[in-house]
Amino acid sequence: MSFRSESFHLAGETLQKAFARHGMEACYCATAEEAREKVLSMIPEGASVTWGGSESMVEAGVIQAVSQGNFEVIDRKTAKNPEEARALYGKMVCADYFLTSTNAFTKDGMLVNIDGASNRVACIAHGPAHVIVLASMDKMCADVEDAVKRIRTLASPPNAVRVGAQTPCAKTGICGDCLSTDCICCQILVTRYSRVPGRIKVVLCGEKLGF
Image (tube, rainbow, N blue to C red; front, side, top):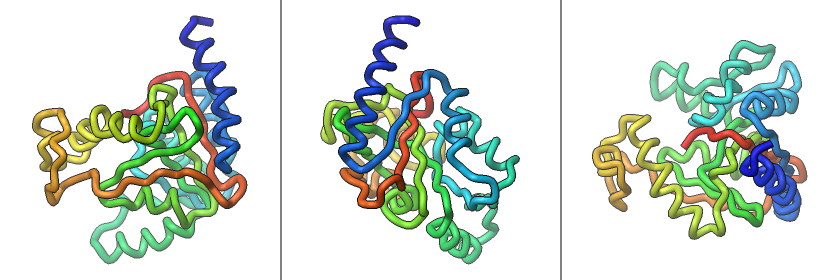
């Protein structure tokens, strides 16, 4: 085990206690493969499953596995028009499981997310019965202020490029603190505490995933 791996393992154990104080359950997996299997083990067959735009879940192979598994999959990308999209969103917020990553998390156990359309932060805050968060250890930040800086510096620009947003950061790679109609930094959600025991589960991963 490398010094980096050992450090992440120790931090993972510490973070489990930190998240528990904030009403969330956490576990640590050294690799993306282990993280994928852990996430899948949390979802019973036949459950309704949906997700936000999560590169971490995609890169770990979770979305592909769920899509091919014995689950009721609710995929917003299958909507052919705004009416279908709205109907699907109604199903998303009532899903058994919502899969997502987090843009950042603090060392004392809080999740920090910034969103554009805000369906992702809405479902983290309220709606789906269970929320499973997959986050690589490089998203750990000192506090909420540090987390917001990380997101706007390192996560939002590549996300803007990913979704084809017409924003300054999609053209320069650097946050322009814009008020563009394409802005993907419209809502900031700090998940400080979960009042529903066991609703939010955080799977920490030692390998880099997402932005």
